[in-house]
Length: 327
Image (cartoon, rainbow, N blue to C red; front, top):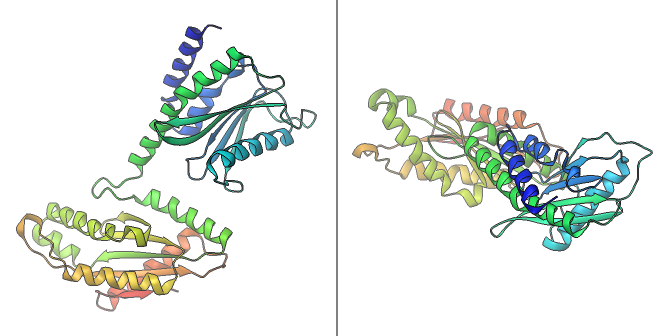
């Protein structure tokens, strides 16, 4: 197959992939029937830059599950050797195409990895597993794919980023926050770490909306989000749950540090002059805090959120402008 033909095929696959709903479906389209152009047993795409890192293997021959494990191990080893990052035990692995067969080969005979890069960013790897070494022309075809694939990955990363943001404040939205919390709890359970969260709520938001209107309220929410973002390095992950409720996720931090940050935020909000349309308004905030202990199995994300929410309710019941630890 000529260079012009493979380029046309790859461009066509790129266009179809970008019409898919998610990155996994896009990769499925991108690698479907690719063995027609690069004869091989499997094509693997290792997205080291995803959270969690992901390997998608498209199988063209009936190989064994041991073969698939060997292929994944080689991808991980290649990435470790190149980047120094050990991602073993952290990846999500998906196999598609021809079903695995116990009678199929158990090891990869020939492994051809190509780095996926976009400008200076390392995205991962594209790799072929084959029974015989790839010819120069076949390797060129694989390289052609590696030039277009990062464009698909970047497009879906941008789509995900946009869909993960709250339109008003630019912070993470509720769906993304729940994903981040689930991931933080899984990582904490695996490593025996602590995780704390806080939910902050503006005490007099309804009064502001009723008196000055919702447009002023929106400006207040954006200013409040800015105050929280000043603590981004300490709070790690910050977003808007909805309305005037904001969530901070703090992996590795215990209850003492979480309460300290909550009280500091309360003090800063109390001292800050919110100035939408020159109104010079003063606000108060209440904060509910919840944490898991180091080494504990930890609750589900929904349970930890419920604990912090109950603490927030108690803080407001106490008169507001204070922080309460939830148990």
